[in-house]
Amino acid sequence: MAEWLTGGWTGAAGNLFLDFLPWWAAVYAANVFLYFVTGWVLVAIQNRYPERRIQQNRRGEKRMRREIRQSVISLLVTDGCLAGGLFLQYRGFTLVEPLALSWWSVPLMFVVSIVVFDAWFYWMHRFMHTKLMYRFHAEHHRSVAPTVWSTYSDDLVDAFVMQCYYLWAPLVMPIPALVLVGHRLYDHFNGTIGHSGFEFWASPASRAPSPMVCVTFHDQHHSRFRYNFANFFSFWDRAMGTIDPKYDEAVKGFERLGARKDGASPAAE
Image (tube, rainbow, N blue to C red; front, side):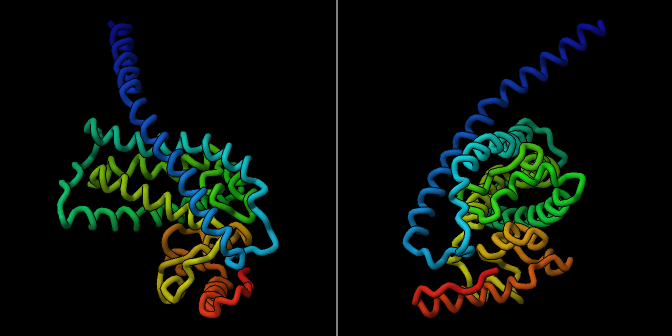
């Protein structure tokens, strides 16, 4: 009897996994497609504005092949988390039911998800910089001058720790599946632009007292390592004293560059 129960449970788990595989494959294919399309579009734009390069003396493009190879691998984990969260929610493995789609639930849960994810990202990112975990995060920091291809250039453990939000959030929060997908799309474009190494977004809205950020924010994290751990906002870094002391001035420099339009490059580090 015990063997039958064990075999039955194993068979059920196996069937569940087989049902999950098409979800995983679909999410992975879509994200890899977006990775390359977004990357090449941004590169084409950036090539027209060399003065917008944040780290003028470094060329992160030299690592393109390695970063693409690592990204295609690590996306299996990132997309496995998203597909897993969507699949488990669809099958009813949740603590709370997702809200029905409505004019108020979609924007509300999108904002809630973004804010919660930013907090998760900040603290997990700090965790990955500890002596215990940095060996798994070091691959991502080989990109001292990040590019559009650096976004997912992660160790598999690193990718899971940082991105497993998409696995657990739809099980414990009432996030509709469509909203979670929208959040992930926003995260993709934000992450790719944030790693691009070119600043087009600097404005008063991306520096104090605003909690919003621009490309310089994460670029400084790669070049200076000890600052700017959050994703979408500067709130946690400012509150915890991990904001780069040169961030706001660097943003002002790119604002002046945009106002002059004469191609001069500000000191961005």
